[in-house]
Amino acid sequence: MLKGEEMMTHLSLIALGTTPTQKIARDQTEALIHRALATLPLDFQIALELHYWKRLSAVEIAEVVGLSPAGVRTRLVRARKQLRQEYELLSAGRPLPGFDGD
Image 1 (cartoon, rainbow, N blue to C red):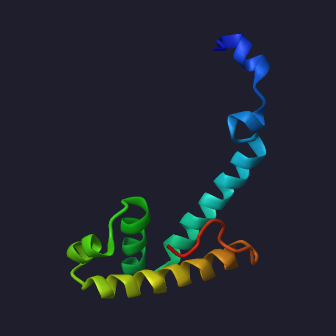
Image 2 (image 1 turned 135 degrees about the horizontal axis):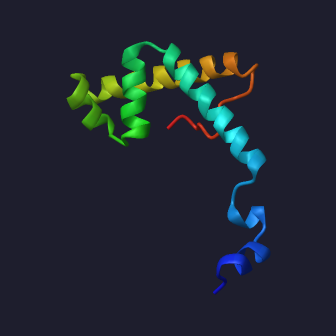
């Protein structure tokens, strides 16, 4: 097992998983996602945040917001669509990376 200075001389940035350029790109993408999210109606923001950041299911979100699970799923579909559109506007047409829709 490598320690301290030995580790630094034997590991590359790729082995560490993220290069400085990748971190900058990821930070810029995250900033655009947050800006796009802020443009959405509040009910869309809440649904997306509860689903993606708090990892709640449609059933759990339904209990919080007072909708049926089917209503929550519909709201999530619409919110994701609008988020993609807003992100593409802010990013000069680039698609929302890693956002497969669910």
